[in-house]
Image (cartoon, rainbow, N blue to C red; front, side, top):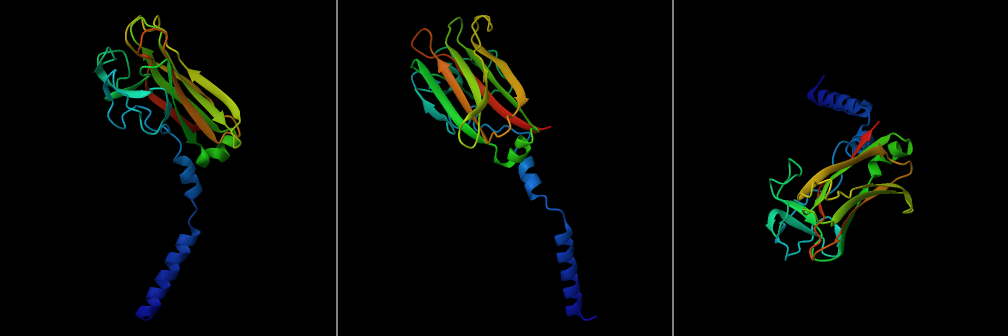
Length: 218
């Protein structure tokens, strides 16, 4: 067999082997959505946080209202610091409400590559966040996950928080809150909403950090 024939035979064999391999692309795409936090910038670390209660830094990846802001841990004005109750893996920043009565932040998480599994009732979710406030003040925060179908209709929701001053023992800081369940069949996305509400004072001291949504296939 001449060299040209050998090269042709080798090429044919390679093409045959490639054609006979199983197609993993859809499975790999679906697997890519599982086991990882789908909330972008849920820890407020993408960008610099405000250094005090007089500055507002709107966090990236969130659509915000009011004066929703990323603030540095230990910023002047009585914010949680590195010694306050809170996540052990806290970074430099957390979310706060600013100098208004109510502030919100939202983002939508698409479930595109998991839709077939969701429609089969095979997908579970773990939704969590650290939530808190300032000393004995009643300013509070909630974090809500709303499941929606392709037409935008609500299929179900779950809310974390608020964390009361009594639960915090009147100490500035954040406590972990979480919820798990099955993603409703027909859901194509999850709307994550952080709402921070002022009760007393001038600054809206509800606090949130480490917002997370993780999907798993059952």
